[in-house]
Amino acid sequence: MSILLDENFPLQLYHRLRKGGAQVEHILLQKRGIPDSTIRQRLTVDPALVFLTHDTEFLELDFECRGAVIVSRVRQGLPIQERIEIWLRGLEAFLAEHLTGNLFELIEPGLIVPWQILRA
Image 1: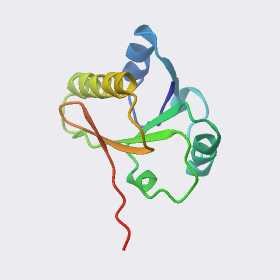
Image 2: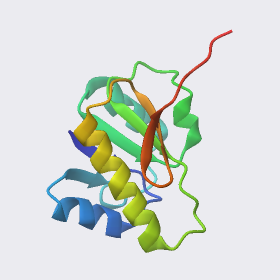
Image 3: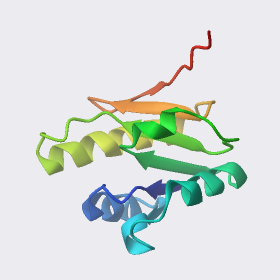
Image 4: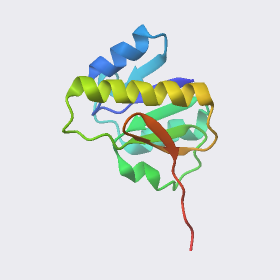
């Protein structure tokens, strides 16, 4: 699996993941400000891509997603080192558990929960 970090995550998280042996990319190190449509396109063709974002718009699965989207619900008011530890715990658990599905939320204290879309 490959992890793609949205541009609003600290580079310290990227470095910690790489140090731990994860395949990880950070949008800040590629092309800052790439449109969501480009990320969605990657998610449609790459089933091994895990995209970590704060952008709740990705919870509206209006495209054929083959990868996984994890929306962070970690409070931004927490100290950065605490947030990094929470994100690391969540990503490590996600990768170890091989959860099925495409949409997830990462909540404190580092839990990954599936996002359920209720249709009327």
